[in-house]
Amino acid sequence: MKVTRRDLLVWSAGAAAGLLVTPVPWKLLDDTSIWSQNWPWIPQPSRTPVEVKQSACTLCPNGCGMKVKVAAGWPVGVSGVSSHPISRGALCPLGFGAHQLNWHPQRLRTVRHGAHPSTWTEARTAFAKACSAGPVVVIDGYPGRAASSLLETFAQKRGGNYRVALGAETRALVPYESWSGVSVAALGYDLENAQTIVSFGATLLDGWGTPGRFTRLWAERAAGNANPELRLIQVESSLSRTAARSWQWVPAHAGTESALAGALARVLLEEHLVSARGPMPPITLAEAANQTGLSANAIRELARTIVAQPPAVAIAIGNNPAIAALNVVLGAVGTRGGIARRSKHTEREKKEKYVAADVAVPAARAVLLDASVPWDFAPQTDAEVFRFAAWDGGSSKADWLLPAPGFLEDLTDVPTAPTSAVETYAVAPSLVKAPPEVQSAAQFLASIDRTLTTPEKIIHARCADFFRGRSGTLRSQEVTPVAQLASVQKLEEELWKGAVWVGEAPPPASLRCELKEWPPVVTAHPETWSRTWSSTWPAPVLPPLATKLYKESTLREAPEKRLA
Ligand code: SF4
Image (cartoon, rainbow, N blue to C red; front, side):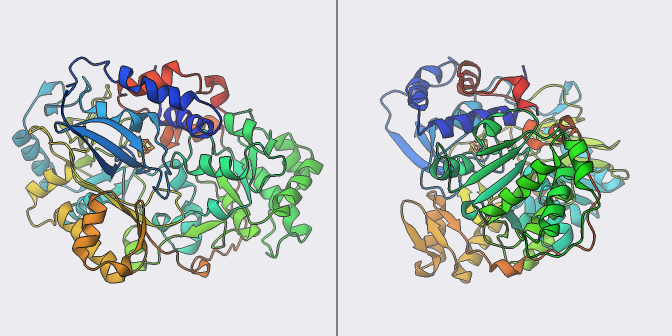
C-alpha cells in the first residue's frame, strides 16, 4: 500500500484536532519508545547524555518547528515546538518518525546509472557533457531556500530554466498572481482573522497546509460550538472528515465548484450583498442548480450565509479562477481575513515568479531534479534526467540516481510555508554528520561551477539583510524585536538555536486584483484535482514509527471517504 503525504496529513489533522479531546496522542507518545526500536540496526546509545536541539523539519516545504533529541551524535527522537508561529507544536507522522529515516533500508548510498552502480565522477562528467550539448532544466520542490537560489543561478548561467514543482495550495493562489502581478511566493491566507471560510473541497481538517495551523484555529474558535466565531462551510460531494466537522456541509456534485462559485458571485452582485460591481458571471442560478445538484434557493441562501459573518474567504484545492474571482467579489483579496500579501520585497518577488515544473521540457539536454521534488514527479522530457534523492521510492525513470543528504544532514534555511499569511525564516543546521557518499544538488552544481555562491554564504547574507532591515521579530520561548538585537551574529546565533524570524505584513492595500471579465468555468472531476495535488504524491519511504502510527491508529479516514 502506498501512503501519500495527504494520508499522513489526514492522520496528523486528526491527531492535532484530537489533541484537545482525546488521550490517544498521549498514548501514542508513550508507545514511541517501543515502536522506535523496530529496526534493530538503529543504534540505541545508552548512558549518554541526551541534548535537545530546536530546529525545523525539512522533509517538506511546511517547515514545522521541531525539537530533536540527540544522543552520541544521532537523533533519537523528535517532537513539535509549541512556540512555532505556524505549526504550533504539531508534526505529521512522517516528521514524527523523521529521526529513523536516515537508517531506512531504502536509503540511497551509491550513485546509480540505470540499473548499474556508478560514481560521482561519472555522473559529473555525464552531466557536464549534457549541459554543454544544450540547455539544462533544474527542478526544485522547495523554492525560496538558499540552495534554491544556487540552483536557479546555475540554470540561468547555462541559458537554461529553473522550474518549481508547485504544491496544490500554492497552485490555488496562481489566479491572484496573474491578476495582481504579485508572485504566489508572496501570497497566503489570513485564516487567523477570517470569520467565515468557504472551502471548495480543500480538506482543511484532513491535510491542508501546515499541520496544526488550521486544526488549532478550528479547535480554538469553532469546535463544539453551534454558533462559532469561525464558520467553516465545506463544499464537498462526500462527507469527508472536514465536511463532518464543518459548521455547514454543502454536498454539491463533484467537479461543479466553478459553477457554484459563479452562481454565488451572481447572487452577491444581484442582491448588492457586497460592495463590488461586476463583472457578472454568465452562469444562471438555474444552470448552477442543475449542475451542482443544489436548489436555486439553497445557492441563494448559501450566498447570504457567506456574507453574514465577515470577513469571509473562499479556498480552492487547486488553480480554480472562478473561486479566486469569488474572493474578488467578496472583497477578500488584500484585506484582513482574506488572501494576504506577506512580503513587500518586490525585487525578490520578481525573481520568484515560478515556472511550473509540469510544463513539457522540449529542448533541454539535461534535467536535474533536486531531492526536494516529490518522488513520483516525472518530467515530460526526452533529456537525460539526473535525480537527487535521499531514499529510493522505487520505479524511478531517472537515468541517474544520486544519493542526497538525509534528515538534518545538511544545513538548510526554511523559508515561509505555502499558505502562511506572514513571512517567516528559520535555519535547520546540520545536526548529523552526512555519510561521505552523499551530496546535495547544490553541492554537485557548486563542484561544477566554482563561481556559484554556496548556500551557507547565501544564508549569512539573508541574515545580514534581516538585521539591516531592523524589522520583524525573533520567536522562540520569547519574542524579541530584531531592532533590539545588538549584532547580526546574535541574530544568527538565535536562528541557529531554533528561533524563527517573523516578518511584518505589508499594508492590505499592497495587493489588488481587478476582474475585467468573469474567468472561464473549470470543470474537473475530483480525481483530476487529486492527481494534481502535491499531497497525494506518495512519500518515498516511511519510518517505522509513521508506519505504525498510520496503519495501527484508527484516526485515519476510510479511503472511500477520502476521495470526494
Ligand atoms: S508536514 Fe512536512 S515539515 Fe511538517 S512534520 Fe510533516 S514532513 Fe515535516
